[in-house]
Length: 608
Image (cartoon, rainbow, N blue to C red):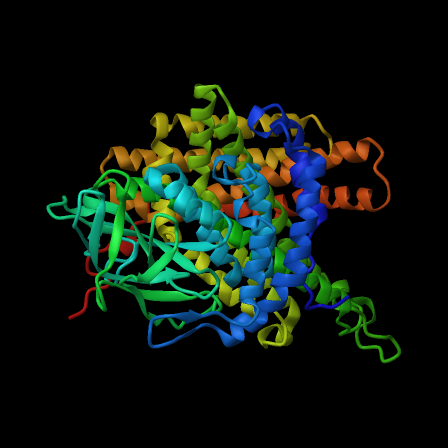
């Protein structure tokens, strides 16, 4: 087997979807998804995996090596093969999997769309960003865009004829979006404005994959309040268009430069000038001064997507590392070290390599479980007719969003690091794919709100929902999982380990809540990142235990052959996680409750 060929792990994906979460039977009870069954989902997974392996993965290295180029008119050329891959997605209807049939979509569950996103991103993260942003922009416009644009604009985006972006960041403002200076001046009574300003770090800011690009731009109208309360959202196209969608003259949204980056070189990250070369026309989306509220819909979707990017890169890296370790012959068995008459063995037989591979395996598989579980909760929320149940599910999704975004992106980078280490010196050179994965994945902890921002959001907002009731409900669910596993002799000690870590997490939450009540906000936020990591570590431990419980039942039911080996691996995952990874949660809890605030000393980083 080639150690550079991308091979998706459909066996584990199917386990999470159909054996652990049982989405085919759970969603079939909801009218919105009743027409879909296991056969439909399986067929989609097979097609997506084939497209990822045969069309998208082969352009990944080329995209990194060639990158994007910019002409003098502000037009970006993407790497070879990108247009062919885009067209393949468009022809297959992959842009509209979970879109409403009212807009020409298939209406499939978001959890299935999340799996497809993992597969495409595992094959090439840089390429997958183009369709990913287009779908997210189309989803926002379908929900909140002007009535006229839904059939005219949204329908074309869901077919891949048009593309989309989100334009938030400005030089000097960065994550502090409320400091944005881009202006929007009304020029008519039909919701049209002229925009002036500059946006930076705009992913997919321009490309040659679609005939039109629709930018969703945050800007200030005359007299708008300061900060985020004065931000409005605008639809700004690359080309003007008429009532039939026919394209006209170039609009004044023009790329001034492409950022030179550490990774994702095939993704055009652009500086976008608005109104600098010619007038830039846009249309107001939603009510004036509610741009941040609307954009958060796209941002929250993107944050879940970034977590899946971390998972996807980790899954690809683990696959490459395992194939390499099975193939690479180096060194003698420990028992025969120093003997000249003993042949060298494959490195997968060395204990430290096994440790690295097992760490990668358990992180990837628990990350997948968490991401798909959150996606399923979203599906059930949007499809249920019970308003109270919907609200409870959405609050659960909100609580877990910063965990998915930040912890999965951090762990994804860690897995890529271990994968490169598994390759040894060969991992550090470009002939093998893991060094690119490591570079590409780093951005996931930075964009869509740095992971530090996610930690502050978790501690400052999400933990306070319903007076802490949402977090308490989550704790109760984990305790119920622990109780069920304590009834199984093989899992009872592991459940006890998780219970101990969960209690430490609860103690950290109480300690940080007390700091907040004492108005020591700086002291509380000092430990926000540690708290998010502790929360994420316990969360993945929960999923390791859940998967072991499902696998144990399969083994008890008489699983044989490869299935038995697979299920036994899930039980071993839980044992490894509780022994090697979960203890971090306890040490983080001790750090959080230490009351140390030494780095906040006012004179520490001052200069003369």
